[in-house]
Length: 277
Image 1: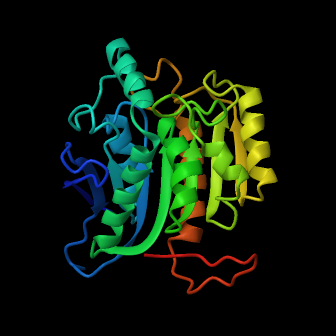
Image 2: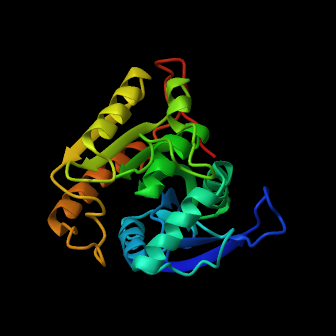
Protein backbone atom coordinates (compact mmCIF):
# COMPACT_ATOMS: atom_id res chain seq x y z
CA UNK A 1 0.00 0.00 0.00
CA UNK A 2 1.37 3.40 -0.98
CA UNK A 3 1.77 6.10 1.68
CA UNK A 4 2.06 9.87 1.98
CA UNK A 5 3.69 12.01 4.67
CA UNK A 6 2.43 15.38 5.88
CA UNK A 7 2.58 17.31 9.15
CA UNK A 8 0.41 19.50 11.38
CA UNK A 9 1.68 22.21 13.72
CA UNK A 10 -0.57 22.02 16.78
CA UNK A 11 -0.50 24.69 19.53
CA UNK A 12 0.22 23.59 23.07
CA UNK A 13 -2.54 24.31 25.57
CA UNK A 14 -0.01 24.27 28.42
CA UNK A 15 2.05 27.00 26.81
CA UNK A 16 0.15 28.56 23.89
CA UNK A 17 2.86 31.16 23.27
CA UNK A 18 5.59 28.57 22.77
CA UNK A 19 6.56 26.75 19.56
CA UNK A 20 3.72 24.43 18.43
CA UNK A 21 4.01 20.67 18.44
CA UNK A 22 4.82 19.39 14.98
CA UNK A 23 2.99 16.10 14.46
CA UNK A 24 4.00 14.14 11.40
CA UNK A 25 1.26 12.05 9.80
CA UNK A 26 2.06 9.07 7.58
CA UNK A 27 -1.01 7.51 5.99
CA UNK A 28 -2.15 5.15 3.25
CA UNK A 29 -2.78 6.63 -0.18
CA UNK A 30 -5.56 5.01 -2.23
CA UNK A 31 -6.73 7.66 -4.72
CA UNK A 32 -9.51 5.47 -6.14
CA UNK A 33 -11.10 5.17 -2.67
CA UNK A 34 -11.30 8.71 -1.27
CA UNK A 35 -13.70 7.66 1.53
CA UNK A 36 -11.44 4.88 2.87
CA UNK A 37 -10.90 4.88 6.65
CA UNK A 38 -8.14 3.30 8.66
CA UNK A 39 -7.31 2.76 12.33
CA UNK A 40 -5.01 5.29 13.97
CA UNK A 41 -1.57 4.62 15.37
CA UNK A 42 0.12 7.00 17.82
CA UNK A 43 3.90 6.62 17.86
CA UNK A 44 6.41 8.02 20.32
CA UNK A 45 10.10 7.30 19.90
CA UNK A 46 13.59 8.14 21.04
CA UNK A 47 15.31 11.27 22.33
CA UNK A 48 16.30 12.10 18.73
CA UNK A 49 12.81 13.17 17.56
CA UNK A 50 11.50 11.89 14.20
CA UNK A 51 14.62 10.51 12.55
CA UNK A 52 15.09 8.44 9.40
CA UNK A 53 14.79 5.08 11.23
CA UNK A 54 11.67 6.31 13.02
CA UNK A 55 10.05 7.49 9.79
CA UNK A 56 10.89 4.22 8.02
CA UNK A 57 9.45 2.15 10.86
CA UNK A 58 6.29 4.27 10.91
CA UNK A 59 6.06 4.05 7.13
CA UNK A 60 5.99 0.27 7.33
CA UNK A 61 3.10 0.54 9.79
CA UNK A 62 1.20 2.98 7.57
CA UNK A 63 1.65 0.77 4.52
CA UNK A 64 -0.23 -1.97 6.40
CA UNK A 65 -3.32 0.26 6.50
CA UNK A 66 -2.96 2.62 9.48
CA UNK A 67 -2.87 6.41 9.89
CA UNK A 68 0.26 7.07 11.94
CA UNK A 69 0.91 10.21 14.01
CA UNK A 70 4.38 11.05 15.33
CA UNK A 71 4.77 14.12 17.55
CA UNK A 72 8.15 15.81 17.83
CA UNK A 73 9.41 15.28 21.33
CA UNK A 74 11.22 18.49 22.20
CA UNK A 75 9.32 21.38 20.59
CA UNK A 76 9.81 23.38 23.80
CA UNK A 77 13.55 23.55 23.13
CA UNK A 78 14.13 23.47 19.37
CA UNK A 79 12.52 22.85 15.98
CA UNK A 80 11.20 19.50 14.72
CA UNK A 81 14.35 18.52 12.85
CA UNK A 82 15.93 15.17 13.77
CA UNK A 83 18.62 15.27 16.42
CA UNK A 84 21.82 13.58 15.16
CA UNK A 85 22.82 10.14 16.41
CA UNK A 86 26.18 11.42 17.65
CA UNK A 87 27.65 12.30 21.02
CA UNK A 88 26.49 15.92 20.92
CA UNK A 89 22.99 14.92 19.79
CA UNK A 90 22.72 12.22 22.43
CA UNK A 91 23.79 14.65 25.15
CA UNK A 92 21.29 17.21 23.88
CA UNK A 93 18.42 14.72 23.80
CA UNK A 94 19.23 13.41 27.26
CA UNK A 95 19.37 16.98 28.57
CA UNK A 96 15.94 17.79 27.12
CA UNK A 97 14.53 14.54 28.45
CA UNK A 98 14.93 15.62 32.06
CA UNK A 99 14.16 19.30 31.44
CA UNK A 100 10.74 18.73 29.90
CA UNK A 101 7.79 18.57 32.29
CA UNK A 102 6.10 15.18 32.54
CA UNK A 103 2.71 16.83 32.02
CA UNK A 104 4.04 18.24 28.73
CA UNK A 105 4.91 14.72 27.56
CA UNK A 106 1.36 13.68 28.42
CA UNK A 107 -0.07 16.63 26.52
CA UNK A 108 1.92 15.73 23.39
CA UNK A 109 0.27 12.31 23.38
CA UNK A 110 -3.18 13.81 23.89
CA UNK A 111 -2.68 16.26 21.02
CA UNK A 112 -1.45 13.46 18.76
CA UNK A 113 -4.49 11.31 19.50
CA UNK A 114 -6.81 14.32 19.16
CA UNK A 115 -5.36 14.92 15.71
CA UNK A 116 -5.85 11.30 14.67
CA UNK A 117 -9.47 11.41 15.80
CA UNK A 118 -10.06 14.59 13.81
CA UNK A 119 -8.87 13.12 10.52
CA UNK A 120 -11.62 12.06 8.12
CA UNK A 121 -9.74 8.94 7.08
CA UNK A 122 -9.27 7.66 10.66
CA UNK A 123 -11.79 5.32 12.27
CA UNK A 124 -11.01 6.56 15.78
CA UNK A 125 -9.72 3.16 16.88
CA UNK A 126 -6.25 3.97 18.18
CA UNK A 127 -3.20 1.82 18.86
CA UNK A 128 0.16 3.05 20.13
CA UNK A 129 3.80 2.12 19.80
CA UNK A 130 6.84 3.49 21.56
CA UNK A 131 10.56 2.86 21.74
CA UNK A 132 13.08 3.89 24.40
CA UNK A 133 11.80 7.20 25.83
CA UNK A 134 8.63 6.72 23.77
CA UNK A 135 8.12 3.25 25.19
CA UNK A 136 7.77 4.77 28.63
CA UNK A 137 5.45 7.51 27.41
CA UNK A 138 3.19 5.12 25.48
CA UNK A 139 3.19 2.01 27.65
CA UNK A 140 2.51 3.39 31.10
CA UNK A 141 1.44 6.97 30.54
CA UNK A 142 -0.56 7.51 27.33
CA UNK A 143 -2.18 4.11 27.69
CA UNK A 144 -3.05 4.88 31.30
CA UNK A 145 -4.36 8.39 30.83
CA UNK A 146 -6.14 8.20 27.48
CA UNK A 147 -8.89 5.57 27.16
CA UNK A 148 -8.92 6.04 23.39
CA UNK A 149 -5.77 3.90 23.16
CA UNK A 150 -7.06 0.35 22.84
CA UNK A 151 -3.68 -1.40 22.72
CA UNK A 152 0.03 -0.60 22.98
CA UNK A 153 3.21 -2.40 21.99
CA UNK A 154 6.38 -0.87 23.44
CA UNK A 155 10.03 -1.62 22.85
CA UNK A 156 12.83 -1.21 25.45
CA UNK A 157 10.98 1.45 27.47
CA UNK A 158 13.43 3.46 29.57
CA UNK A 159 13.29 5.22 32.94
CA UNK A 160 10.17 3.42 34.20
CA UNK A 161 11.99 1.33 36.81
CA UNK A 162 14.08 4.28 38.00
CA UNK A 163 11.25 6.87 37.94
CA UNK A 164 13.64 9.43 36.42
CA UNK A 165 11.64 10.88 33.52
CA UNK A 166 10.98 14.61 33.17
CA UNK A 167 12.00 17.73 35.06
CA UNK A 168 13.52 16.84 38.37
CA UNK A 169 14.02 13.23 37.19
CA UNK A 170 11.10 12.13 39.31
CA UNK A 171 8.06 10.78 37.48
CA UNK A 172 4.99 9.11 38.98
CA UNK A 173 4.52 6.39 36.36
CA UNK A 174 4.78 3.29 38.55
CA UNK A 175 2.84 5.04 41.30
CA UNK A 176 -0.01 5.57 38.85
CA UNK A 177 0.19 1.92 37.80
CA UNK A 178 0.00 0.80 41.44
CA UNK A 179 -2.99 3.12 41.91
CA UNK A 180 -4.83 1.19 39.21
CA UNK A 181 -4.69 3.70 36.35
CA UNK A 182 -3.90 0.96 33.82
CA UNK A 183 -6.36 -1.62 35.12
CA UNK A 184 -9.20 -2.30 32.71
CA UNK A 185 -7.53 -0.31 29.93
CA UNK A 186 -6.35 -1.64 26.58
CA UNK A 187 -4.00 -4.54 26.00
CA UNK A 188 -0.33 -3.81 26.66
CA UNK A 189 2.77 -5.55 25.31
CA UNK A 190 6.22 -4.69 26.61
CA UNK A 191 9.37 -5.99 24.90
CA UNK A 192 12.88 -5.79 26.34
CA UNK A 193 16.26 -7.11 25.33
CA UNK A 194 17.98 -9.18 27.98
CA UNK A 195 21.28 -7.47 27.17
CA UNK A 196 19.78 -3.96 27.50
CA UNK A 197 22.07 -2.03 29.88
CA UNK A 198 19.52 0.80 30.13
CA UNK A 199 16.97 -1.51 31.77
CA UNK A 200 18.77 -4.22 33.76
CA UNK A 201 17.17 -7.41 34.97
CA UNK A 202 16.16 -5.94 38.33
CA UNK A 203 14.46 -3.07 36.53
CA UNK A 204 12.60 -5.40 34.16
CA UNK A 205 11.49 -7.54 37.08
CA UNK A 206 10.17 -4.47 38.89
CA UNK A 207 8.21 -3.31 35.84
CA UNK A 208 6.74 -6.76 35.22
CA UNK A 209 5.74 -7.41 38.81
CA UNK A 210 4.23 -3.95 39.24
CA UNK A 211 2.10 -4.33 36.12
CA UNK A 212 1.01 -7.86 36.97
CA UNK A 213 0.22 -6.98 40.59
CA UNK A 214 -1.93 -4.12 39.29
CA UNK A 215 -3.92 -6.61 37.16
CA UNK A 216 -2.93 -4.98 33.86
CA UNK A 217 -3.70 -6.92 30.67
CA UNK A 218 -0.11 -7.43 29.58
CA UNK A 219 2.24 -9.64 27.61
CA UNK A 220 5.85 -9.21 28.75
CA UNK A 221 8.55 -10.40 26.33
CA UNK A 222 12.28 -10.61 26.94
CA UNK A 223 14.40 -11.40 23.88
CA UNK A 224 18.07 -11.91 23.14
CA UNK A 225 18.90 -8.35 22.14
CA UNK A 226 20.47 -5.10 23.28
CA UNK A 227 18.98 -1.64 23.56
CA UNK A 228 17.87 0.01 20.29
CA UNK A 229 17.99 -3.31 18.42
CA UNK A 230 15.24 -2.08 16.06
CA UNK A 231 17.10 1.03 14.89
CA UNK A 232 18.55 0.44 11.42
CA UNK A 233 20.96 3.40 11.58
CA UNK A 234 23.71 4.33 14.02
CA UNK A 235 22.69 1.54 16.38
CA UNK A 236 26.29 0.90 17.47
CA UNK A 237 26.18 -2.64 16.16
CA UNK A 238 22.96 -3.51 18.00
CA UNK A 239 20.48 -3.64 15.08
CA UNK A 240 18.93 -7.10 14.63
CA UNK A 241 16.93 -7.05 11.41
CA UNK A 242 15.62 -10.62 11.71
CA UNK A 243 14.38 -10.13 15.27
CA UNK A 244 12.86 -6.78 14.30
CA UNK A 245 10.92 -8.42 11.46
CA UNK A 246 9.61 -11.13 13.77
CA UNK A 247 8.49 -8.68 16.45
CA UNK A 248 6.96 -6.37 13.84
CA UNK A 249 4.72 -9.27 12.80
CA UNK A 250 3.86 -9.90 16.44
CA UNK A 251 2.97 -6.23 16.86
CA UNK A 252 0.74 -6.30 13.78
CA UNK A 253 -1.16 -9.29 15.14
CA UNK A 254 -1.94 -7.40 18.33
CA UNK A 255 -3.13 -4.31 16.52
CA UNK A 256 -5.05 -6.10 13.78
CA UNK A 257 -6.91 -7.94 16.52
CA UNK A 258 -7.57 -4.96 18.78
CA UNK A 259 -8.02 -1.96 16.47
CA UNK A 260 -7.89 -3.26 12.91
CA UNK A 261 -11.48 -4.45 13.04
CA UNK A 262 -14.53 -2.77 14.51
CA UNK A 263 -16.12 -5.49 16.62
CA UNK A 264 -18.78 -3.26 18.11
CA UNK A 265 -19.12 -2.43 21.78
CA UNK A 266 -16.95 -4.48 24.08
CA UNK A 267 -18.73 -6.46 26.78
CA UNK A 268 -17.63 -5.22 30.20
CA UNK A 269 -16.07 -8.30 31.77
CA UNK A 270 -14.27 -6.52 34.59
CA UNK A 271 -16.30 -3.39 35.04
CA UNK A 272 -14.73 -1.64 32.09
CA UNK A 273 -15.83 -0.70 28.58
CA UNK A 274 -13.47 0.14 25.75
CA UNK A 275 -13.60 3.73 24.52
CA UNK A 276 -13.25 5.17 21.05
CA UNK A 277 -13.12 8.70 19.75
